[in-house]
Amino acid sequence: MPLYAVLIYADDSAHALDATEADLAEPDGHGDELAASGVMRAAYAFAPRALAKSIRPDGVADGPFLDAPQAVAGVYVIEAADQDAALAIAGTNPVIRGSGGVEVRLVHSGGTIPQP
Image 1 (tube, rainbow, N blue to C red):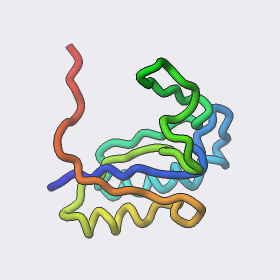
Image 2: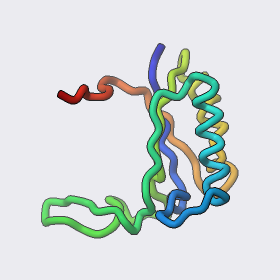
Image 3: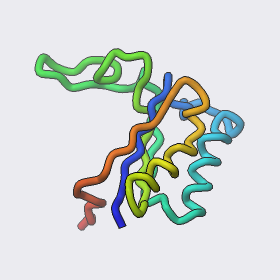
């Protein structure tokens, strides 16, 4: 079955270093639901954009790569029969109810790298 990456765009990551369980209840609950359903294959929540560093031709810069109102707050990989099924799954992400959204991309290749 194909894999799809779901990129989460938000004003910032909910996963601040000092985030409380209450702060994370909704996003983590959504992840738990996807994991329990068996479709989630990997998930990564990113720290807030203020902690990002970008490497550019002229050196390292503070902040995310793009200066945009929203940043990538996290990414997860799901397994779905087709793009329509992936869109239906990704459409349950709670960030969509706010000012954010998600992007769904078919995974072309790759995977975890075994460690020696």
